[in-house]
Amino acid sequence: MGVWVWDVLHLVVGKDSPVCVPAQHFSEHVKVLQSYRRGVAHFSALQGHCVCVTAQDSSKVTPSGYNDKSGVSMWTYRGRQSVSIDKYMELVETMQPDWYEALNDADTDSASSKKRVSKSTAMSMAYLKQCIDHHKVAKVMRAAVGGHSEGDRSRWSKSLAEKLEDTSIISGYALLGLHTNGPPTEKLEPESMHNLIKASIDPLPADLPRQAAGMWNPLTVLKLAEHGVDIFDSAFPFLVTERRGALTFPCRLNKTLTDGECSKNDKLEHRNKRLKVCEDNSGTKMCEDNPDTKMMCEEKPKTKMCEDKPKTKMEEEENAKKEDKENQPIREKEATSPYEINLKDKSNVSQLEPLLAGCECYTCKNFTRAYVHHLANVNELLAPVLLMMHNLHHWMDFFTSIREAIKTDRLEDLRSLIESSVLESKEA
Image (cartoon, rainbow, N blue to C red; front, side, top):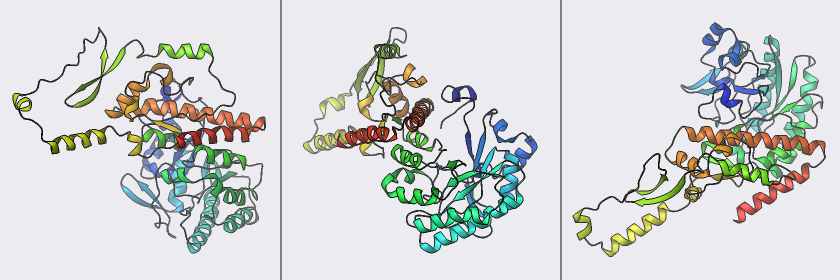
């Protein structure tokens, strides 16, 4: 997510927004948090935010096949670490969250065998019972697992209420086992998820919240919301930021630009400078024609050898192929989605408009596409910071629209709006 500090975060989200903290990133720092004594929210300078602790990080792929009876494998910066129920509960108590995800074996996806799914449900139930036995702080969120089997998911959800009578410490349900985290989650389509989500959620009590962590694409998010999922994370905008993209899919119903909004975008930080593209021997680069900077682009002098030596036909063909390859849009080389634009693409080199017209985020109100494109291509740390500010702002706007659409019974209209945009992007 780049380097975020308290005041930068609050340019994008409210001071009361929940924060999701994966336990795996603190599994080696129990003693540090115990010495600190004030919990992970204060430790991260996010006091005032309520905290949810999850077992795994939904933005990183969890390697499969490493869970066993001794514990669940968590992948830290130092490698694999097997976390037992005792160690997990000690970590949770030290982190002092408002609610936490019960330890679980959700290591299943569409390719998992029936035996693996059966083992997943059995171990997850055992971990859940042990979490409740060890329970001392916060409330526990029960894992709804079952792989990609409708029958297993339905049976599991029904068994939660039957086998666990004490619900006073239960905060809700976490929809898990549909993926093993990371970028592959983005590829899960709403149509393939419909029956699985329905089988998991329908048997659950309607008065408790449902949580679904993961890099869900916007259309899948709408499908999950339609079935009653209440809590999501910001893993998808993080994914888009990591590949240097900016979310641009339409997320507001009846949203049109007014003259006032258009005029605001004429005062972007770099609009007072004339940006131009200059070619030299080293390739394409950006220059600012500004009297204060006194920057000039001059063609590098050629050596006498370069001037006198004629190029052969083979060399000319090779240079032409190399130039064509360099000028290919980067979106053909790197994975992107129809919900975003790629800021590494050379088409943005002289674009003086904001990332998204009408967007009110800090990035769009102060910087141009050309400038962010430059930052992304030179690997400046500021690039992911500015992009994450925009992407998270757009993501929050998207969820505001979902809430409004649910209240006004227009969720289908919002879905149609996004589907049309996705179709146009694919055709283009």
